[in-house]
Length: 470
Ligand code: GDP
Ligand code: GDP
Image 1: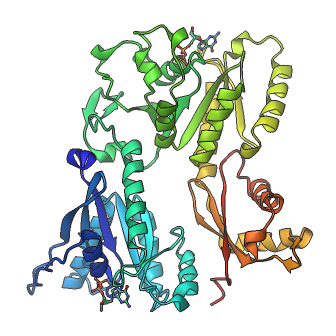
Image 2: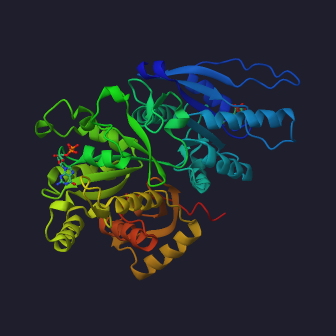
């Protein structure tokens, strides 16, 4: 319970009435909690309790339920309270009912939740009967990621849900807050703040500049923030605990991860400094866009490739920046060679942006800024289901999937179920036997035809009928 002691992770259970929110609440809380009586004219209190899960604890909140009601009626006020709860929670469990199936009200609320919630797990309740398995797929349509089937009443899937919750808390711990102090520092105003709003407001891009020691990370960050603050030590108000720096660079607000290498600079001989994988991983998990900084002299050595691969596995967007470009004599030839090497050595990041720059002289920074924005946009891309399926039909016609042991693989449908990174689910039969080469054909097609270059793509294969037929 170490983390919960510092700042409590808040999970709210939301959904329309009767989907089983209270039953799920009791199941996760492992106790039965009395629900406070509704007093006429008094808004029902939102029910909450502390839950411990392994090393973590969190606050679990049962909301009154979302309803469309007359303005200012009790139901309306309760709904508003639920909405406020969605906004303030760190994770939202959006509960739907597999027995009733997908309703238009679910769709309306999914839209709201997608806009307001920081993070959502789509919980499909009441799946104790196996004939409801197919019904679960229907909920892909909500565009809230992969549905998570449970039966709150019969304790099915609850253990899995608990471990998914724990993973979310762990990720949050790395991403959102500094485990040491919970503070973030605003370089512009030189004030420290405890507000989580400052940590993840809209219109801010979280970036980190990572790479081997001596590739020029601190020099580049200094250029970006415009002052020599990183080297100037604790008297500037930057302590070892700070995890991110807030700055405006060329009109865009950025949160920059403050890597250990930068902070230690003044104290140790950087030539001896080793690449810390755990620090690098922390930086990657923090980021929307990762700038992998390579020394032009030794670019794309095995450690660089390993880091690039980590970024891909974590599903972050990436820009390759080749530093110390001022030292290169034949620039055109060098850049062409580097691009060929990137293509051959990092096939999983096909089309990734390569920017040449000099952190020391501040050259190429506009280009870097542009590529970061572009990369961020691609990472957030949303493609309509209609467009995707027109595309898929064409793709399959041009090059049908091969037969596997006499079985014809049938691809029926594709839809984007998530972004950051772009994640797609493809439905059909015998998809388990789909050869890797065909899967690559689809992924590369998505990249080229929708411009998802240099960004990780996830493709899930799902057995079963087209969930959108109805
Ligand atoms: P809430 O209004 O969303 O809080 O829903 P409740 O938790 O009060 O549950 C509504 C109804 O659904 C109750 O009759 C529950 O017993 C029932 N219910 C809850 N979970 C399940 C489940 O997993 N399977 C089935 N079949 N019924 C359930
Ligand atoms: P870090 O360990 O990645 O933070 O690297 P530093 O920012 O400390 O830079 C390591 C060395 O490379 C220092 O001597 C810098 O002056 C030098 N350096 C950084 N950027 C450039 C650049 O663009 N051009 C040249 N020529 N040297 C650079």
